[in-house]
Length: 122
Image 1 (tube, rainbow, N blue to C red):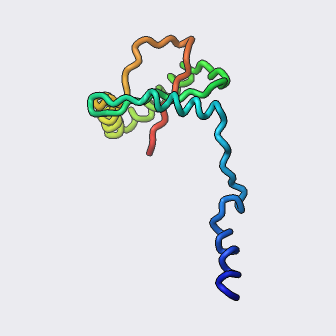
Image 2: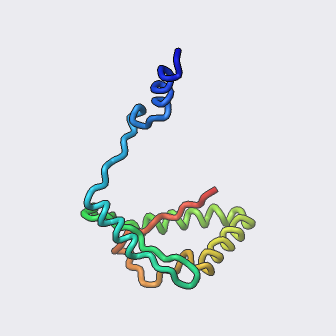
Image 3: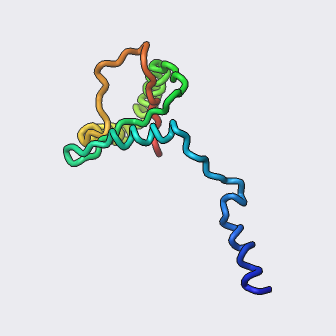
């Protein structure tokens, strides 16, 4: 078999379209979202600050304050059974606060908004 005869079949091994993976064409909404993201990038205090992207015409997210609060409470109870992990966990959260990676929410309303439930990464 010649090299020319081998080339097309070998190429198909890494061709995503052959696997049925075809990239979507960006929609006008995607373009708007990307522009909003780029417009929100700020460099301040030796850090980049970026707003979360928001998609146009998205469905309203459910208010989930109590579910997120219960999940966090459950995690804290698990950690209290392992004091060394609770201490380490506290140190990590404190470092994230000190580095301004996270911030304390002071004006929350349990009847409004969507909260990101806390999930530890192991």
